[in-house]
Amino acid sequence: MPQGQPSVVPEDGLTTRQRRNRPLVLVHTGQGKGKSTAAFGLALRAWNQGWPVGVFQFVKSAKWKVGEERALTVLGATGEGGTVAWHKMGEGWSWVQRDSQLSNEEAAREGWEQVKRDLAAETYQLLVLDEFAYPLKWGWVDVEEVVAVLRDRPGTQHVVITGRDAPAALRDFADLVTDMTKVKHPMDAGQKGQRGIEW
Amino acid sequence: MPQGQPSVVPEDGLTTRQRRNRPLVLVHTGQGKGKSTAAFGLALRAWNQGWPVGVFQFVKSAKWKVGEERALTVLGATGEGGTVAWHKMGEGWSWVQRDSQLSNEEAAREGWEQVKRDLAAETYQLLVLDEFAYPLKWGWVDVEEVVAVLRDRPGTQHVVITGRDAPAALRDFADLVTDMTKVKHPMDAGQKGQRGIEW
Image (cartoon, rainbow over all chains, first blue to last red; front, top):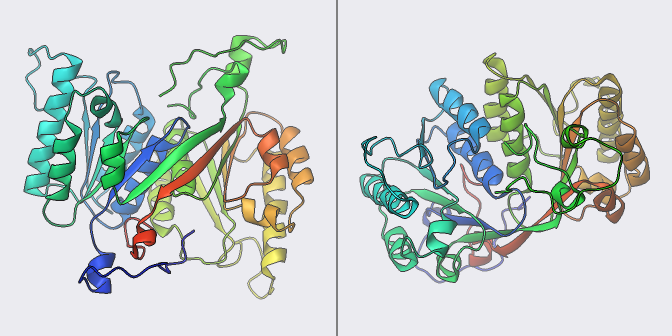
């Protein structure tokens, strides 16, 4: 519930308007629930602004987040807000030939190559790189390259990256970092995930 | 990214199925960004399940979260998923007469009275009580009463409560508590909020 009063005014040579509209890199990390749901909640705001939204799901299972996927693609198709393009690693990226058998590592790298192409082309105004912290953590995608590409991206493209254990280099670079800290989770009490809540 | 393996199996006399479908109370609290956006992200999953979703915004300004409001009401109107009812304290609850001038405290209490009526009637399957932690913190609504009402609610109604400084009694009772911990926020660097990101 930010009140819009910055605590410091930086000496960066920017006007308030330039600074206000500066594109952001946001990181949702930590062990708790809400990292991805908050990213998709943010996509609702972007949709309402009429922005083209691109989602890249860096996860193995194609079944994850089917609720958000369906809701956001239905929203994008209404024509009442922005568009939504949803890309899933889990069933093979749509732009990769079906008969090419990529390892998870290769698939993650291929996803990042497409993100780079889309950043260069300014395809989207909000990019959600869901669970992208994992290939970074595992070294499948080089975090220094990611930071350099994000730093030099053109235009006003906001980027949200989710996942546990986001590397320090990414956290240091990001404009906003929230750590979703687990205080209590139903699975600690022996409860399994359920529809409508976990997917 | 929970893997569905509970760490403990409790001796509560419930079958796995009963335990799995147990309705949950979720609390998103802490100083960081993402409390409300994660709640609205969860609403996307509920919508996809075909659930009726009720949102109660316990905030003074009617302008907050207009992006999420528009997106979710558009989704609810498509007929392709659940319904969405959106109630705002900020412009006066819809069921309260326009010429009645309620104080914020009275309005918050009136909102809670309606939530109680809807819980008793099982109007919704997911209720988002956005920023409800504030009237609890300020003592406008009695947290012990809230816990008792939630504990005794009928059926399978999931309830998400957001806001900083959720009282201990609520945190103790909730099934899931995530603390959105602020690591870094653009306002710390002198940046104001911007459209598509903060609203």
